[in-house]
Image (cartoon, rainbow, N blue to C red):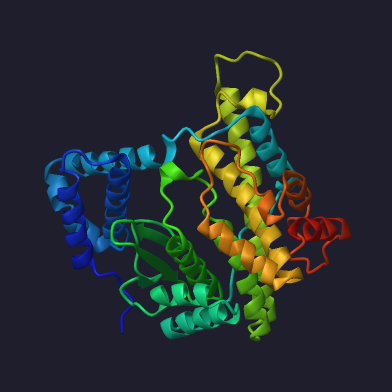
Amino acid sequence: MTNKWNRSEIKQRQKYVMERLKTENLSEKEKELLESSLLSYYNMLNMGISKSKYYIKNIVDKISHNKLKLQEENKYDALAHKLLFEQNNYLDEDYLQFLLDLANNIAKNIPEDISFKTINVSNKDLIETSKNFYKSLGDSNIYDKALMILDNPQRLYILNNKIPLMYETSGININDYVFAEAYCLAVKNNNLMDYQALNHEVMHGIDFYSNKKLYSENYYGFHEVPTYMIDYLFIDYLEKQGFDKNEIQKLKEQKDNYLQKLARFTLNEIRIDMLRNKDDLKKDKSLTAQNVKKTLSNESLKQLLEIESGVISFGLYYQFKQNKDIGLSHLKKFMQSNISPNERPNFEKYGLSDEVLLSLSKEIGIYSNNVNYNIETKDTLNNKSR
């Protein structure tokens, strides 16, 4: 059976939602649900289009000098910006400085991207390995949600990398808020990373099925916490299943390298934006919250929050390694909870205070070195989790 999204179904839902949006007196919440799903349909209908089909689809645009295409893209870009970045999430200098400190602790110069060995990977192998992994966690709630995606070929789209997509990606999760469906796409490159990419996107779906978080009700930026934690556990699982040790080591290194590269890149972008500010002629250009707050872009803030998410996920992974019940409990509570956009995010209830996160941020990189965690971090986490 082919794993592919049902484009006809998506178009029908798109039409339904567009009609619903014409209804008068919609509540703000209902409008947000509809607009979020409309954006999802647009992304799905364009994400799975090969370049050849894309060119055929846009013959009309060529005749109209791309005006129709630009109008459509501008419309959905504006909608995405409205949903994601116009919520005015709480951000004071103290929290911004904390985010900058995390990034500074993690940022490192990293070698070129890792190259994986080519192997034969079937869709069945990818799906069955992911199923077995989620079953191995021993939590029926998480496993049942995983099966909602893995057992439904119309919710899990597996693409061969030979198809040239209009969007560069190894995987993506897109959620339908109106019909409460999670869609996942994984691009198969025939290497070990394919397993992690698919499993990662399935976890996004599990997160959605745990709590369909609206952008207006949540502090946007922490959606990678469950998936990044699962990445660690999944790599460990593959290692125990006897996959090539050298390729497993590459997965571990890539896991560490990504966050370190993201931190370095983000700090550089923040520095560039600050230097470009012609209105600020101060000689002090150090990366402090006071200096960067005026020029901090939405994208840089999102990346700082992703960096914090990476540290949180490492903490949750470490808790799971020390005590599986505590780790799973914290993971499920995190997925089921909203993070208020009106106050500073606080993760102490998961045993992850700012102090613990700052300590953990200095340990990012040790996963691929296969070394033990320091006693101070261990004791802090265990005490906070009791």
